[in-house]
Length: 190
Image (cartoon, rainbow, N blue to C red):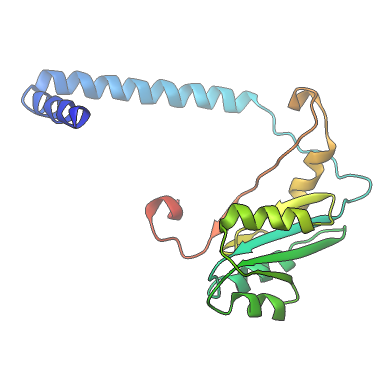
């Protein structure tokens, strides 16, 4: 309440004091300009690093936790199956006690489906999937997201690099851009 009160008091002060409002706008503009300039300079000097493909592509286990996802699981699995990958992969759908046809849809699409009798949440579903996974690399994809066709080809090589670009360490996790189904708010739309 105190923070909101100070915020509203500050707005009142700025609204009734044009000189202070002008200086605030100048300060915010300067911060934005210098931040953007700094980012532009740094971004122009950083070189993109693209690792080489491994000599042998590892096996991959793709885990898809779902709960009442009958409206999205089909398209998500189509996107997963459309991913190009030279190695072997398995798709494991962990149905977390759905009350709709999510598991049936996933089974019809050829995914290995594990039905949990008691809902334990996404983390529990992922942990169960990890225990069942046979792949050397584990990939987790939500049941309402659609990975791009080249997602695995872009991600997997990073696990087989240990270069100065990564501080000489082996990479332990990689993420890529994934599209969200039916975005409902501005954050999801962005």
